[in-house]
Image 1 (spheres, helix red, strand yellow):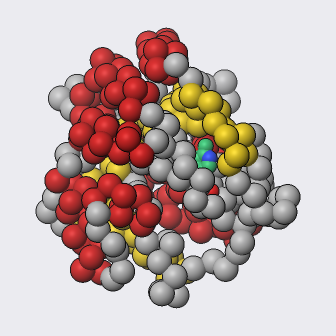
Image 2 (cartoon, rainbow, N blue to C red):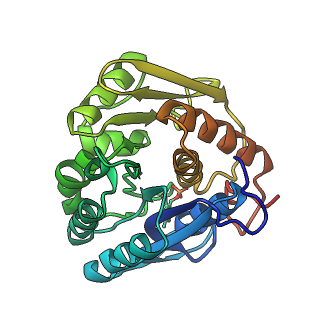
Amino acid sequence: LPLTADGETPVRVLTIAGTDSGGGAGIQADSRTMAMCGVHACVAVAAVTVQNSVGVSAFHEVPPEIVAGQVRSVVGDIGIGAAKTGMLASTAIIEAVTEVCGEMGIGKAGIGKARPIPLLVDPVCASMHGDPLLHASALDALRTSLIPIATIVTPNLDEVRLITGIDVVDDPSARKAAEALHALGAQWSLVKGGHLRTSAESRDLLFDGDKFLEFTSPRIDTGNDHGGGDTLGAAIVCALANGYSVPAAVEFGKGWVTRCLQAAYDLGAGHGPVSPLW
Ligand code: PLP
């Protein structure tokens, strides 16, 4: 992405998400990706996870008014070109985030303004090890509160199943899932097929209520795949903040995460982080 000239304030983005003490996923992956994309990362911490390369053993939820307060504080002073949500843990936090996004013109609330603030909603439900990152009771708030204001929603296949009840096994079921997500109110839905191991390629399907667009990349064979969804979402948000269209931003994000997977390093006894250092 274009870096601004020396001394100029760079483009700013905001991530509203959970921390990863192992530095692999969540806010750490987001802010590292954003820095590497030449964008200044503002962070609103929604939850603190006790986590390493092997898994998540506990998490602590930040009070909803403090989560919303971080968003209000940053948008009012620093200003952002796009925002992203990740792990939000609870119904109360999801509702507080939806409300403050409405107040600050983020997501669908920004439509009609001179410069609407795009909102990427990554509906994080669990870690790759199956450790829960969202209370099961909060799924409904995702469906009825946050996803309806999203510019783009980016679930993986497990999240698609939890949110829509659709088991994605092939192209027709991926299309059905993309339609169901769009029907919840998101402007664009991206069904991430990276975890569908039946294909030699990683295929993502993007839908805007009218046309389907497919994005493919080679499947990179690595065990260092922790935080891949966060890294993809963060790169997409950086592109959106730089004025890319949603399809162009997804294309940029997909290329970014593929290069990251190729450069991902070993860490601890488990899975190393997708977002590398270079
Ligand atoms: N921890 C946090 C805070 C996250 O936001 C996420 C994913 O979004 C994860 C862990 C899980 O990452 P992974 O599915 O790669 O284990």
